[in-house]
Image 1 (cartoon, rainbow, N blue to C red):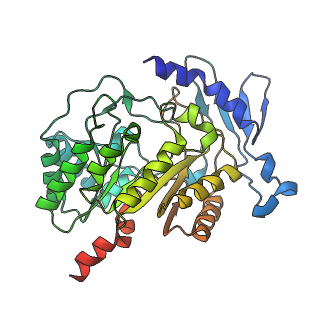
Image 2 (tube, rainbow, N blue to C red; image 1 turned 180 degrees about the horizontal axis):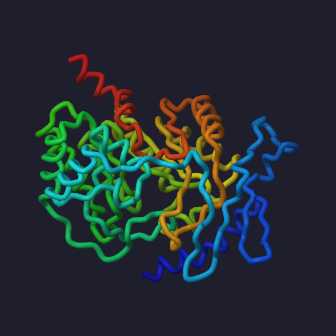
Image 3 (tube, rainbow, N blue to C red; image 1 turned 45 degrees about the horizontal axis):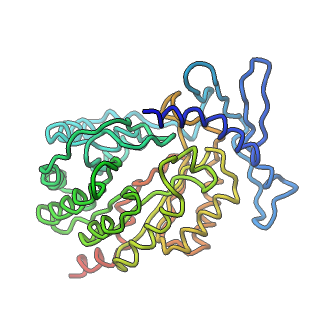
Length: 363
């Protein structure tokens, strides 16, 4: 657990790093207020992008008292979500409990859970609810996980069949104690979905397997329509946001996945509002395209609890629109950008880009 506290102690370093792209000041109460306007993109220095980055005028207030930091204050109106408590939501929740399955929708406190579950779509969380890593943004608990359940892939397939899904998303916690990082669980789950729900497309959101390319090959040989691996943030913030990961290793994984299966769509996403600047976001876009990534998602970072990284700034909806335009100009086949966008948001629509999905439909 020491890695968690190391991550927490680095919050102040994150805030210091953010000052290179954000204005900040300390008020009379000793609280840090951040005015999220990147210096590089101010009105007078918009540079080559020709775009002034003017974030939400109400600054994110970071309360650094107590054992953790909590971003306080009223969230912008565009971040408000509807209640998830609907009949369809309760039906699916009962189904998952009956199959002893986890969903990342619940574990990661996804703001779109009501909308997605209401449409009958969900993202299955494989290999338990305990992660071996301690990323500064993630709500999933860190610790020593239970043994892998060899029967889980079958239950995944049965749940997909019971929900009559046309598209399923599989993700997992990190299982670094496993020789292959649990890659076989992804592969077997895909096989069971193909067997019990023919025609259902599959997206896998995988960990980096610590650079074990044989593990990646195991997943790719199961032929998912979409291979997703999130870069999560810009290179400069990795030590704070993803201390056990490597930016360039994630890029290499995405490129290798495409080379292993040229028909698979590759996908990656980032959160913004952690202290990055506009130019750094564009660099991530350029890096992903240089590594043959087809789909990119961008959403606002929301702090799960006071023990997670604070929000440095909020981006406006029109700024997400501009990011979508930047991505489309760079050649991404699909850009999903918005304040509440998460990695699997509208994933069923993205699956229609797959040549394998097109072949099933035409056949």
